[in-house]
Length: 120
Image 1 (tube, rainbow, N blue to C red):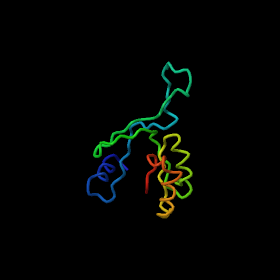
Image 2 (cartoon, helix red, strand yellow; image 1 turned 60 degrees about the vertical axis):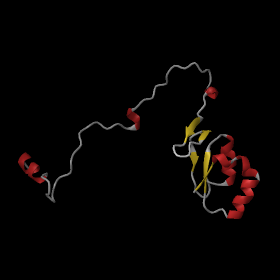
Image 3 (cartoon, rainbow, N blue to C red; image 1 turned 135 degrees about the horizontal axis):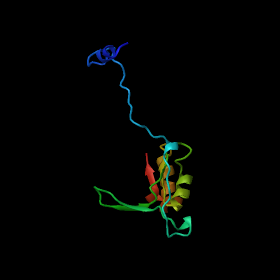
Image 4 (cartoon, helix red, strand yellow; image 1 turned 60 degrees about the horizontal axis):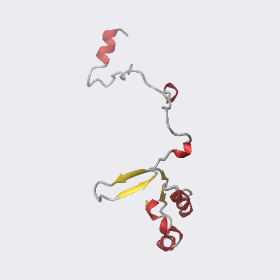
């Protein structure tokens, strides 16, 4: 095919139009290098990943680690929520718990964990 033939195929409304070939550079994970900056910290244990969020509509604030465990059957359990709440991470509890199980957990072991629990 000649260049003229290719251009006629690429006209709008042509059902046989050729796909657009992108020529810009694309980067992959192996093309990018993260270089750490100098730091005054002497250990990684001094790093805090806690953040404080203020919710736009309620104006309430929440402080914790912005990490949410999935609401899958084996992950979003009360037991996982208890462990992650100690580290100020959120757990999305799965939907298969009964109301009675919720009441028992929320009034017992889970009472202090509720700020770190999401319901799906």
